[in-house]
Structures are given as structure tokens and as C-alpha cells.
Length: 268
Length: 278
Image 1 (cartoon, each protein chain N blue to C red):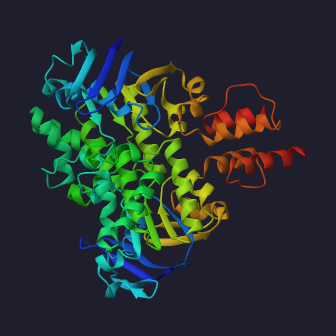
Image 2 (image 1 turned 180 degrees about the vertical axis):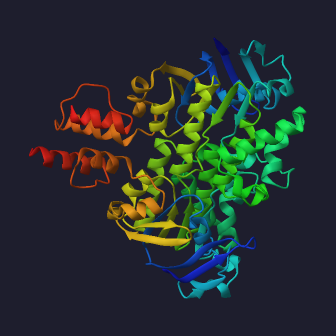
Image 3 (image 1 turned 90 degrees about the vertical axis):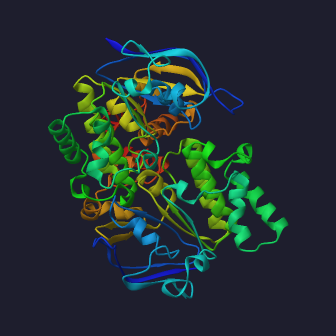
């Protein structure tokens, strides 16, 4: 399912204009990452996708639905959302009950709910804590409970707001595998993150935002546009910084690409 | 002079089946940044809670061993006294907001009010903190409408103003963008240079390499390594840590014989430039 954003402006009741005319098309099955400093408008943008926010001007369409004409509850059938603070979406007394909430709301058959919960527990490595109260878990585990809840919904669109926060190497690898599963299932995925290294390694569609506007969109080459990177107040990914410092011709996204570029420079 | 002693510390939360900490012993020097790293679930936050006195005074469970802060045994010292010695910024900044104050300014001043700090002194400290942590523009806003990054800065500011000689920072930049992270890390470096004892839990190993004088590694509740950053971080993969891309690229370059350099793997940009130009 695709997302179409046309000239989207959002002004909060405080008077702050957080988005100033953003237009963006996200194709069905695409995997997009939004990068930008705090206050760039990333979270404000994605909250329009599930109807938590409505446009001040402009429009957002989720498939054939204009979000202004549908409630949050209706949009939840199409858009799964993992909040920046997972505690904002956890309210059951056990992990497996929490994961079952979404499919139950969708009136999925009980045995199918059970299967989805089992799958989500497995993919998110939560089997050992399935009976635990979510608030007895560490913050990084609660983030995975929130992710598992969205996995179980099987919505055609998934939004993850800062899923890399607090993740160790195992957690990031698990997140990467989940992104691949969603790619295979042709789920449209939009991720907001500050982790530019993770972003460049796992996303071929990068959107840079600053001051409520979309600055640039593209593959890893967006990082070569110094003016945009500077305006977005981003650091280059580590290997791109190193490549620049060493005077390499290419800006690599992965360690393998970096070493290939070095080997090429060596003539080996 | 060291002012934080941890002696054979073990702790099991009340309903847990396994201990979160097992026999941890270390001393932490003042005027330095000591980093605590480890995979998720290794016990980092639990150790922080014990250093700050929240274990045993807030979290229920079985504690063995002892923690002494500036000579005071945390088991025998009330939390109200310990907070003047140790400030802690929690891993989740959303949990640190009191909910009792209507503005950012008031939130920052909250701890000082509870300590009975004189009004002039309070205002001076709060003003410094608003500027240091980039919160001046949000001074009159409700803490509850701040972004995640702003709430994290607010948590840092609220603890900073308490001027405790020991600061425990549990993933203090998790919600921050690169600029925000840099500003906080530079502030941490300044505070350490001014003589504060800083304990820093971080997943961003490049910053650990830049700031920390020493790195402690926790693995399944046990202290498994203690040493200089570059020496410890070279084994990041062994402990499930987020290896820097510099180290990853250097390792790969060595494996593929694109570089023959036996020096320790680089962890910062500067170290990497030197390593690859060798």
C-alpha cells in the first residue's frame, strides 16, 4: 500500500509550524528512512500516517484513504505504528496479551491470533518473557514488545519511530532481519532514526529533513550533497567520514564497499 | 582519590529467577569518565541504580556486597542524603520528568527546591542549565509537550543543577541527534575535567573511545573486563557491543590483506585515519 503526501503543513496549537509544505510519494512495499536533527519534523510527519495528527493544510493519503476522512481506529487497520517512547502504547499486564491486542481489535479468529502472537514473540525474541508484565521489563525489551505488537497486526504499512534507540548489536541485527522479512512480505516500511550508520547500511531510500521541510531524497548519494547534510545537521556515516578523510573517490555505505574502494585505490 | 567503591556487589530483583549483578568489584576515580558497556540485559542499568542508591532503597530484591559513595555506605545512608552526592540520569528520560511542574524552568529547579537552595543561587544554576542544554527557547513550555530529545536534555539539566560530585548517566544521548549528542558529550568532558566522577553507559562506542579513561564490561551481571578504551573495545564483538564501523573496516581490510597493520583496531575517526595511512 502506498502513501501520498501533498503539500503537507502542520502547525501545533502552540503556534509552532512543524511541517511547512512537504510532498512525498512512498510506493507500496518501499522501505524509507527519515533522517534529520531533533525538531526537523520527522515524528510530526509520520504521525500523520496513522491519523494521530491531521493536516493543517495539504493532504495525506494511505492507499485510497484521505486521512482527514478516517479515524485513528480505521487507519490502524492499514498502518502499524511503533512510538518513539514504547511506554506510550503498552497497557496490558502480560507481553503476550499486549501483542494480542491489535489482532483482537481487528476481529481476527482466535487460532489465527494465537499463531500471530507466537510468530511475533519468536521474531522479536520475547518467548522467555511472554508472561511477564511489560513494565517489569527493561526499556529495550519494552521497545521490542511494541514492535511485536505491530508485527502481529500485519498491516500493509509499518512506521517505526526510533527503533534503533538503546539497541545493542544483537538487537540491531534482529531489527535488520525484521526489515528483510517485511521486504519479502512487501510491507511498506518507514523508519525514523538518528543512527545514520544503520540507515545507510539498510536503506536505499533516504529522506533528509530540516526545519519542517524535505531537503533531499535518494540513495546513499544524498550524503554526498554537503549542503543538505549540513542543513540537516547530520554527521556523515562513519565510513563515509573516513573515506573523505582518506581522499577516497567513493563514499561507501558498508565496510565491504569501503575495503573494495581501498583495494581499488591500491590497485590490488 | 577514588570516591566510589563497589565491593562484591550482587543483586537479584524481587521476582527474578537469576541475579542481575554477580560479585562486581571496582573503584571509580574522581575527575574521570568511566564507561560501562555490555549487551542489553548485562546489568548496566542495575549497576547504575546501585551506585546511585536506588538499590536497595527503591528497587526491591536481594543485595549482597556494598557500595560506598564518598565514604558513605549506600545501604546505611538515606536516599535523601545520597542524592546530594550522586545524581543519576535514567535510561528513559520520559520516566524522569516529575509531572509535578508546569514549565521546563520549574522542572529543572524542582530538585534544588527540595534541597532548600537559596533562590538567587537556584535561579543562577537554572539559567546556566537552560543555556548549557539548549532549553532556553522551551523554558516556559510544559515538560510534557517536549520532544524526546528535549525531554532527555531536560533530564540532564535537572541533574546537572544538583552539582553532585558523582553523576551516573545511563544512555544520556539515546534520544539526541548528532549535534545534541556532541554537545552533551562535550559537557560531560568538561564536568570530568572539573573534578566530577562520571559514570557513562553508552552504546555509541566512538564516544566511549573519545571520552572514557576506563571501560568496564558487564556480561550477564558479571564484570568481565576492565581497561583502557581501545584495548577493551577491540573485543566489542565478543560481548555483543555495537562495534564501530572503523574497527569493522580495519578488521576486514586486515583479513583481506588490503592493509597489513597489526596495531589495535581504530575506534575513532582520527585513530582510523592513522591506522589506514600506516
